[in-house]
Amino acid sequence: MTAQATDTAVQTSIVVDVPQEKAFRYFTEKIGEWWVPEHHLLQGVTEMVFEPRVGGHIIDRAADGTESRWSRVLAYEPPSRVVFSWDVSLQWQIETDPAKTSEIEVRFIPEGDNRTLVELEHRNLDRHGEGWEGMRNAVGSDGGWPIGLRRFAERVNA
Image (cartoon, rainbow, N blue to C red; front, side, top):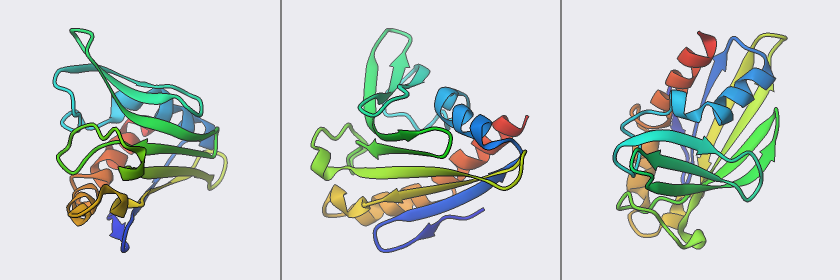
């Protein structure tokens, strides 16, 4: 699996051997089980929460109770689609200005009863401002979304 970068977006996909509904639920409800541990802004994360509604957040929580709300849920359409913001600055800090954030759309497309194509697009990366290409290169590299989707596939298929 590789990511393809366009001018302002990165796309990647993977096929998992589970039904569409299970793939969607695992991606959202079990995000902390597949998320790459080194990909947190907050140190010592012990829990990730995906609030399953438009207006919800993706939240990292540390053992001491500290929280990092680094994403807003923009669309929640089980079991076929979810869109969330990437409220992360070019300095890998929380970005509080929504005009300077990008977004991720994940589509879950059935390919039979027990097989689902998961397509991920991280788009509008240019909203991050001058130097945004570095963010595109990071999330599109093998250590970005591709490793995240591989971890997702390994765990949901287990």
